[in-house]
Length: 413
Length: 103
Ligand SMILES: Cc1cc2nc3c(=O)[nH]c(=O)nc-3n(C[C@H](O)[C@H](O)[C@H](O)COP(=O)(O)OP(=O)(O)OC[C@H]3O[C@@H](n4cnc5c(N)ncnc54)[C@H](O)[C@@H]3O)c2cc1C
Ligand SMILES: [Zn+2]
Image (cartoon, rainbow over all chains, first blue to last red; front, side):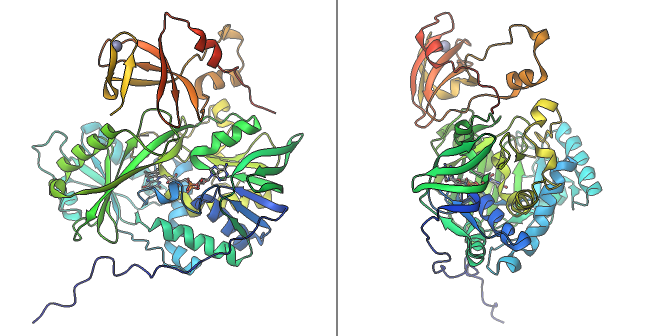
């Protein structure tokens, strides 16, 4: 008997799309102006139209749609966060991911292949088991796997006891996975465009017109645009904007690097993350190994990072996955991520009545894309924070009601 | 890998250094009289300048001494380094007037 037709890696990728949205001239005024055409800005635009019927909206993007962190991230989607506040928003987001392809009418290659978060020390094990129990209480699917079970989920992980940081087990979230980030951006953009929203590229916001505690409009490289409400979705560049408004936001922008290998046969069935040795890996649909590291230590806006960070990450990867040793590195890049002191986002009101903030997602905001778009659209439409973002206010740094996801977030920030 | 000039040891590889964030962040003069908001700003809020930024570095794998540097956060180039016992002009040049939350 001859073997069945083999699956060509990449065969499930859709055709390259035609233009999915108009390229309009900006109007002189909009009810809502969203600054930043990354995933968060586009998702907010989509849900403003879909859930609230608000379509007099412009998304202003200084470069091209989805060209910032949206195009640079390693696309890991999971909701196994420790604290109730985080698990609420990430789990609702994961539920939205599960129906997103249908909602957008566009392929996003959402692949629920699971995520393993490895434990390498006794303390890692205890923290991980605690997180699994917290996840279960919040209705998030999570299991604790012993080392031999880790090997069954991902046979290429080095589970030998003879390595520097042996794998003592892992948490496993089967519903976690990856999606094709460009298609996610384009899917949201297409829907927003169909609803009549203007997506304006090559349009940088360079200042604000204010009147007391209201912003009346934004100054851009394509003229001044009046705005009823302004939402800042500029990720790593948020403080450049808030500095112009005189609002201090406790974020620090750091380069975060990632890299891909050449195309390989499917060898890596799930997503593997390790906090202790600090690498995270999945295999993209076409076959590249996609790997991320930790942030570079210093502040930066240059969209590149230091070589030694990559070097350390590769050393960890090769010890954990000996089969990677012969893979060729194809390219590396960096995005600029906005890290906050408690490793949690900052969403909601600002000292200006009609300006909303969405930032501080740092190294982990791709997975929140639909969830934060949903919640921010609600917040803009009603003027009241959606319950999922209500804990993530700017004033928590004064009240002390922090949502500290360091460590719990399963990557070091 | 970028070479960083330690003001005591001279140029050394980046991996020998530890980043210490924004320089010239003064501890409150009268800690007992500081409001919660001012404390919060001292603890959590730092400038996040795009461009020339005064910051602290430690030559942790070398002489283990702290120094200040003016670095461009868009090119990552170090423009100047200075020992802590040398209060050169850049401290006053670049120490930003502490902004409070506005408006
Ligand atoms: C290497 C790397 C790996 C990552 N891996 C993951 C991961 O595996 N999982 C995960 O969940 N998250 C991950 N992240 C984080 C995630 O990418 C971000 O948190 C998320 O993309 C941020 O939201 P966004 O998509 O709107 O940001 P962006 O896509 O960066 O959107 C912001 C947009 O604002 C625009 N902008 C900025 N200033 C202005 C202005 N003045 N005027 C007009 N436009 C402006 C920018 O050009 C940009 O397009 C990773 C990030 C990086 C860099
Ligand atoms: Zn030295």
